[in-house]
Amino acid sequence: MLVAIALGSNLGDRAATLRAAKRRLRAEPGVLLVVDSELYETAPVGGPAGQGAYLNAVALLETLLSADDLLALLHRIEHQFGRVRSAQDGPRTLDLDLLLYGDAVIQTPTLTVPHPRLHERAFVLVPLAEMGDAKELRHPTLNKTMQELHDALPIEERREVRKVFPKIEAPPTLAGLTAFVTGSTAGIGADIAKTFEDHGATVIRHGRFPRDQQRYLYGNLADAGVAERLATEAWDAAGGSLDILVCNAGADTLTGDAAKWSFERKLQELLAVDLVGTMLLSRSIGSMMKARGRGCILTIGWDQAETGMDGDSGQLFAAVKGAVMCFTRSLALSLAPEVRVNCIAPGWIRTAWGETASPLWQERVRRETPLGVWGLPEDIAAAALMLASPAASFLTGQTLRVNGGAVRG
Ligand code: ADP
Ligand code: MG
Image (cartoon, rainbow, N blue to C red; front, side, top):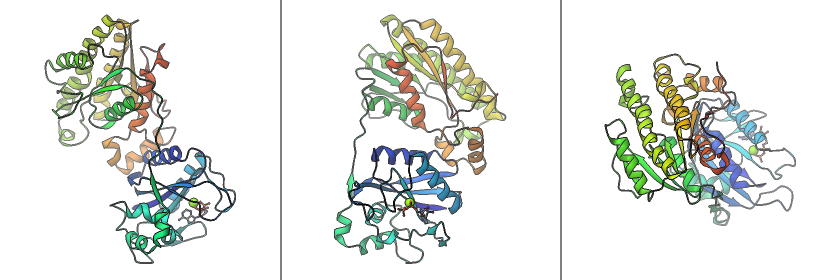
């Protein structure tokens, strides 16, 4: 079911709250955030005098939840973000309204859909009309599109809704440091690279194929000699002094053509890229870091490698990622005290596979994750930032499970 919701905040760090709320929706099993709008600033409508201006946004979700369950989820999220229901139209840290639920018309004591004031609210219709996917959605009782409802509003009201781009102030935790992140053209690697850059690092990216891009190296880690070549190239690109290496590159055997490969072929590919690629690259760069006297290396394991998971994928990842986790500890001992080496073991993270995983998987993620939501690539990036930062200077040889609290086995 395609659903439109509105987000609003006029208390506290409004932009941070709205971003965090969108992020929370992106992590919810059974909910897919299809597209979300920019942020818009508007004066408050009604309510007690003197309250601050609102930041608003809209989002389209694809969901398996019923309208009632979705409203309950929206209320839970409002509550988590400190919403206190006080005066009618009073100030709030977060307001989440259900605007449209497909073309359903619902009228119960707790839920009215379409939202009763949708057609009169410029702060909802302006963002909807500026989103390609949303402007053609039709109001089921007024029988007009969002664009048409928008156009029917007085121009002065529309002009009051201004797009804003609040800056995120990231502390320069990694200022002056250079990082090489393998497999950073998409997914978790891209988030790690972006996060490091946001915090002041110079990042050298890597992908399998050539690209016309500054500070970018390429090569398939499954191919002979590539790890050693990349080690030299990354060291040179960093001006002879690389500070951080993230061995993130991993073979995708879950989506695309590779999903149909035989067990043995998947195993060969995972061993070649995830294990041998990580070992050769981190050994080469690690010895250069050690000789230079400092450095930090991160590898990527898997939280269920130690506890076991049934099925082919469980066997494959347990063997390969378990080996990476064990290798990491030995490398940490070899490279101490100059170089710190740690492993991040992700749990259920919503990468390309997680976005399209079946309802059964969505339920399984909820069941097996005490925090009840998917991890997001940025959760792994946040852990990588912490491990790479000076705050982690006494941490080496550790495996950090970033998995929403799952302590199976
Ligand atoms: P508002 O969003 O109108 O400023 P609240 O967020 O406090 O005010 O919502 C008041 C009540 O409105 C909620 O308890 C909820 O049950 C009810 N409600 C009815 N229809 C909707 C809807 N489409 N979206 C969100 N809340 C709704
Ligand atoms: Mg509301």
